[in-house]
Length: 362
Image (cartoon, rainbow, N blue to C red; front, side, top):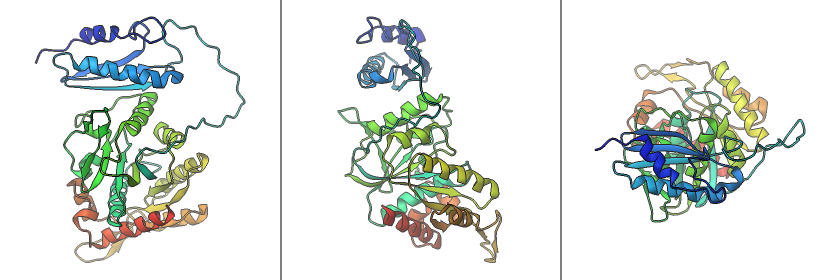
């Protein structure tokens, strides 16, 4: 395969003119972050947000033209509004605004989805993704057509947890066809990236990618989804705010461990949802206790009951406690989460009980 030169890509992009500015998108400084790796090309188009619909068509034209170049096997592009102006435009004066502003919301339902449930955590390492995927499979076991969207751009876990190695395809309308595994409709940026490749994106590019994946994925490929579970990244950053301001979420489940530091961060997660008017369905205490597989003795390694106490103090439901157990870890690592691998186990029963509580709130 011949080596793809950056100049070749830029020359192709220079042939694409901005519809209203009378110049090409490269000369206008709109092309950012152009990368080439093993035949895969990625870049961002910096746009004025009011031109998003028009520039989405330009983005698709860019992708199509670049794919015609010999050696290019895949193109990943996003729209970003990070820059306040593009080259060739006059600087705009900032509009005066009050000291306190309400975040701009553009709430809409996801096509092909009835209900959306977010699974979040205040910090990483508390088992949020394990909880999210088993919750989704538990909802499915209750007879609900369920999907999961891995929104953790920097650390997608769902591909490994579902044992997915194939890449999504596109239909004739350029919609992304999600992967169906264990009966679960799923989508993740991890499906589109090479394994062990770091996602080095700034906030606006991440937000643009999330919105684009939501809009371009055909979630109802196997029929309308009753529930779409969002596996959010840890913390209270750009992705969470973008979703809260753009997606009609029915509610959120916050995952924590019993540790004081995890509970402190969980409180921040709860506060974020309250400030963005997203209903909190409740708190799940993960790694709640350890049962010795040899003797059956119980050990509260990280403490116990902290999440229940926080739920009571903040006036939200306590949804359940999940033990620290090797079977839960190994089944997830092997791509067959415990709700699928051991559906009759006591651990699966806990996830299914939590799923019943969530389904009742929908």
